[in-house]
Amino acid sequence: MNLEEYKGVYVFAQQVDNVLNSIAFELIGKGKDLANDLGTDVTAVLVGSDVKGLADELAEYGADRVIVVDDPECKEYRTEPYAHALASVIEKYKPEIFLVGATAIGRDLGPRVSARIHTGLTADCTQLEVGDFPINPIPGKEQKHNQLLMTRPAFGGNTIATIACPDFRPQMATVRPGVMQKREKVAGAKAVIEEFNPGFTPDNKYVEILKVVKAVSDTVDIMDAKILVSGGRGVGSAENFKLLDDLAAVLGATVSCSRAVVDAGWKSKDLQVGQTGKTVRPNVYFAIGISGAIQHLAGMEESDIIIAINKDETAPIFDVADYGIVGDLNKVLPALTEKLKSELAAK
Image (spheres, rainbow, N blue to C red):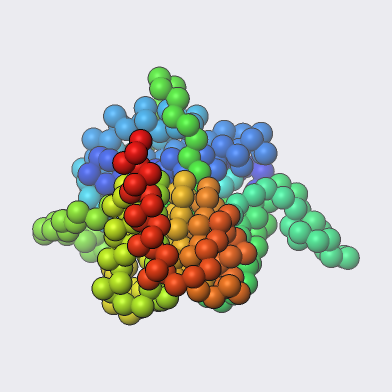
């Protein structure tokens, strides 16, 4: 493999029902940072049917070029045609870096593509940067420069591993949604749009979709919330979440939770913040009855303001909190809710 042939940062721009997933914009944002370090540009790869119209939106979020694979075979996501599409793009254009969102689709697609093109894949990354590998020079071993250093939690979040792929290209990673920040949208920005179709020959690996059943939910995506009122095991019971609901109602906030709450059956999985849940970046994050285990912090420590309420003054959550209240949440929350209600009413 001639590594010098591989140039550019590419990202998979995931769309469903011709609506781009926010992870596409987050990957472009991070891709721009990596591309600037490498002196190259960012290309978004858009796969679907009748999706060319989405290319301008990708440009507005920073894509320099958009490669569009548009074919009826890609109308709904299926592993085989999508894997064929991405592998064909990689084989033709030879990107140095290829990023995929660690969504349900990306977790299925990324490993299949990396195996097909014979390169490595670092899954569920929380940090990406360009640097030297090995990070610390080892006598007698060549230190390679401008490598993609892919950082991800390991062993249940108890340690952090930084991984590189120095001998194969592209360097591939899946990235957790909500971890990277998308850039400000620039209305009217344009990108070079190139259509590419590798040809699809259905075979016995092509799944036939008989029916698509969409789940109906009125739950707000916690990753989009500006204010989150999050509860942990310390809330005590599912019924006690009424205190959090009341506070959230006053603030126009969304209620979320820790893994312990989901495991106890008090709240649904889609409200979970943390290493095995969602990564959030709200303006304000209330951590109520949450001890602050590293697995939970991984999902919310980038919040602008963190307010912790816990009766244990030694709880690790206070180490990352901007404001902390030591006390019984059954007394603190009603008082706080009433105070905020009266203050907001006065305005």
